[in-house]
Length: 501
Ligand SMILES: *Cc1c(COP(=O)(O)O)cnc(C)c1O
Image 1: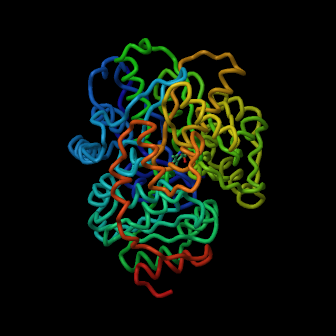
Image 2: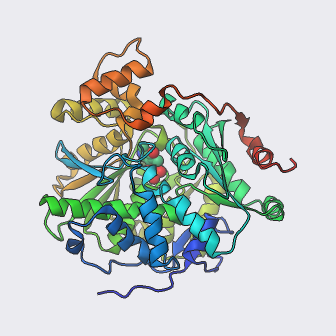
């Protein structure tokens, strides 16, 4: 069918023209000009989907990743995959698919920290370690990460005690669920550090990006044999592993006879930084039969407004919702779609991103919007979200978390308005146990109950076993209590690394 590209190079969305290997792009995270790495050409499947039926997740992972990470040998890549998708997952199939209320929920939360971030962050540290060896990097690799709640824990868990690495995480104080916070503040590992910052996720993310583009700082680090990298979803080493589960879910549906070979499906994704849905789009571009990509937002509905009007405008009130991992006004990975939609013009992308940075908004032209017509946007209010958790439970007995419910609620509206009866996959991105209070509060009276009582109640109501990730933090000591102001994040990084402030 298609020829495998032997030497895939990665280039910046902002057009600085440099070409990096996959391992170099994974190590760097962000391009030097502030852009995101894109494969120079998008690969397409060099296999038939039906030929993957009956094979396991690791096999699909290898078939996809080898098309992108071409400077990894077969052995290296297979070893990374073996180490990532193992007993840390509480289901042998790595992902599960549940059928409820006329949709297929792909459960992506069976990893160590019970959110979909584990799907990519289980493998990223291994990809990075191999990359460091390949590129003769002997110093320390420091991972800086801003988190809206789930990346932080998944990254800390993935990198904890990985030799030669140090990981520093910043999360918005008061902007994550109590379980999310406890998961992070109890994280063990001599190389992990976590700060609660006084600001929201966008502030923290912007500040991390600033640290990345601070050349004086980078030089100071280089002088001390330290290399900065990012575990955020902008890293190509996160994006590519996320393509795998959409392909694998399709294969599992084929296997179960729920769809026919070649049948198109919709994919509906609860969206924040636009990484997860972008991976679904990459799967489509590679050859997965996908009809619509439904981009579901919560009340921070920048993307919904964009798909409606063509104007991206972050100048608005930031709302804290019960789906905190989607409380984002600047969806970083959206830059990659912008880049593709303007004919891969680095100059154009760069101009729009500069407008976003300087004025808080930009607009896409007609041809760009036409290019994006595979996407449709929707959003769910807090009220709709809670009502939907209740609806899905009442109708099917299935209990979903507030992020998954945003997608489920948006899908329900989409179906009723569009009369599109294409079979639809909904990305179920977190275990309801991570947001037990919001979830049970939607279904029952939990007045006066604490987190752990609500967790017991969720267990009884859903019949789903309490995940190890939750049991583990129940009596775990809080190790991390540091807080800092947004402006001081750079100084904190220096301090942690033992450099002069
Ligand atoms: C991170 C996250 C999202 C948003 O995913 P993006 O890739 O940032 O769009 C949705 N739900 C949960 C539970 C998450 O942790």
